[in-house]
Length: 237
Ligand SMILES: Nc1ncnc2c1ncn2[C@@H]1O[C@H](COP(=O)(O)OP(=O)(O)O)[C@@H](O)[C@H]1O
Ligand SMILES: [Mg+2]
Image (tube, rainbow, N blue to C red):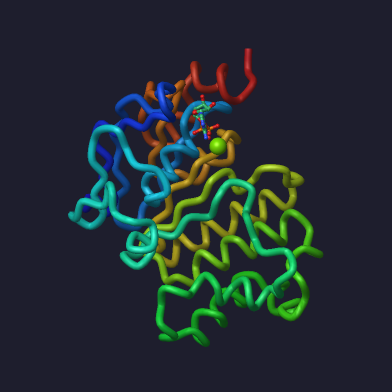
């Protein structure tokens, strides 16, 4: 398996608080890899560090064989990593279309029309309401918009931070179906979720993160069947 993203012994701290304490994992080309863990485990910190929004205190991050730790975030976007942040962070007063075009700022105008058409095909509701202010959207629609915006950068790796947060089970299932569809079209995905069931069902491979360390790594199916995982993350006795 050709790894597109390779994280080795990554450490990240906020001052004296060590949030990520030496984790290693990789994402193969075309794979969907999930990082699961409770609140405070270090999931968001890990994604923000891969994106270049935080600098590691140790370890390395390589993307397509090239070191990206300590590269500026805009350069990392240009290399092909898109990040759908926790809480979505869409621009509420801008229209759907304006939000989507912002996602393409690193693209210098190439293939914009085709990419917009692809996002609209994936999420028809965005096309129907493309002139509407994004702030009028429901949580699920805002999540679709955040994913659409990330796709507009033409990513080789799509990273999502808790896309299911705050969504009803039906809307959540819709978002997860979209990730399956993207993956079938060949998009490589790194998914971070507290919702372990949904994240592991989709995953080729999963890692359990506990207070800054990876404690368990296996295929998504094996983790779903693991008694410890079921007890700790799926609420079983
Ligand atoms: N800006 C920050 N300043 C200080 N500590 C932080 C900050 N952001 C996160 N932390 C701490 O780092 C740890 C990991 O947080 P985070 O990566 O947000 O976890 P998760 O996304 O898994 O909930 C937690 O102990 C959290 O309190
Ligand atoms: Mg988080």
